[in-house]
Image (cartoon, rainbow, N blue to C red; front, side, top):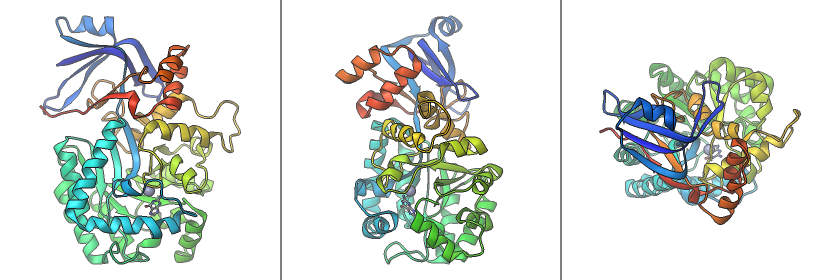
Length: 427
Ligand code: GUN
Ligand code: ZN
């Protein structure tokens, strides 16, 4: 058992923040040897429950849950910041050529290691990430994540049409490969498999149907795709699938809407689409830096709240411009102002933070497992130093309440704020 004394940020069942200025986090192995939070709260109260326990004291630091990135592309690490007119030319000119290189297992392994280092430096302890259409890209990512004992989710991209040589796969083989990867990796340690059709325009009906059949056969796998990101993409999807009520409805028709189905973007939606998300339990990975960078549009946070469907934050690197959850939360704050009808200053800082931790975990169907520091959660946590830079030190010292403290970190924070990223180990 280990105990850490510092300020402590957690969330209650309603997603509201719980903050102990002088807190104690007690961590220890469960019956299977996996390190979990055993106790958490005010130092005086919690330490009295564990007499004699040795305590590591981190004065001036904040312990917080590891961030959860709901949508990212590890193979796009090298194309971050590639300028383009919009999504479709960006895919053609930068993304597909970069992804073609992942046919090489050595390249996949090298990028996977760099990517995981970068996530750790930025305090992201779980990500739902695209791989590429090459099974070896998935193998490399799972191998690297397993060695680090991380909770990570990925899958082979399915794209058997409208894709160039080098990334296009073959329908039958792609489904056989997907099933083999599910059997080999899903549920190994903390790894999970996501059935990953790139987006409807790059899959044939047969491939989407096969993906839906696999999603039914393996109901606790994830489904991971993109929808309604960009106006040209929406137009193209409508031309390709004229019978569907909407672009999102295409996925419903192939059995790809259920809990643990995660769709990035969901910008160009109407309320019927939002109700479909709610009624199926599917989730949106809101990717504001990507949407601003590629000029895709603005996610409707109020619409998501009004209808009440699962959503959380994501970087979408390489469309997104930063691995840092602080950048993503700040961009979400900007986007939340767009089209805002309710009074107030966009989304509250604690709610931005929730959407990148416990709320994202809930959207992924991993509530109570990650994204929080309540007893029972896996012990993935961060040691934040609010004095990491002169400006952060000055600004956080002036914070008069929790929202002001969190907002100072969101606006001014980057990887320097993350002093340590602690990953739950199996002991
Ligand atoms: N739609 C289809 N593929 C992609 C991708 O790689 N990135 C983004 N942002 N959108 C996509
Ligand atoms: Zn994406």
